[in-house]
Image 1 (spheres, rainbow, N blue to C red):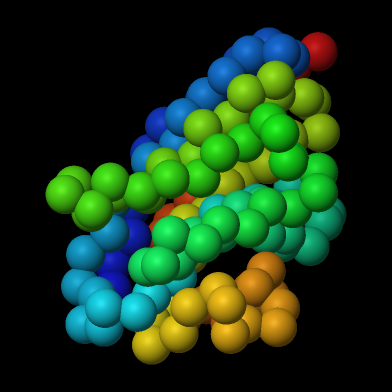
Image 2: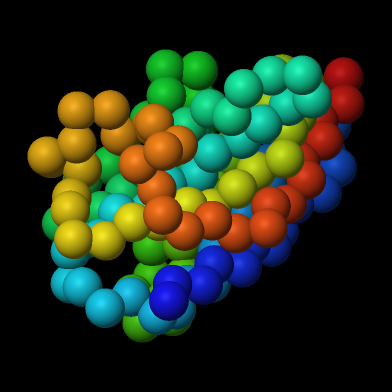
Length: 128
């Protein structure tokens, strides 16, 4: 059973930076994919960035050039470096993962239904 634990959320002013971390454990396949989603009050959950075991990455248009997803395999940790934050980035951020597939074969990599495992979420608040 894959377990995901997020940390690193907080409050920051517009233009600032935050780094989210997601400690992962329990993968049984060498092929996996992980992503960061976010959900603001009253809005649907949306994919922000994804990465897979082959190193492929994908980003939502709204965060390209500002957010960077990465992983440290030695620490089994996923990161999301968020720069130039905007008030519109305010949301609960979730780490998600799936196995036995990679981003290259996924038609809709940011479809929440495609992820089997989820963390509890960490709040990010950006003030103007």
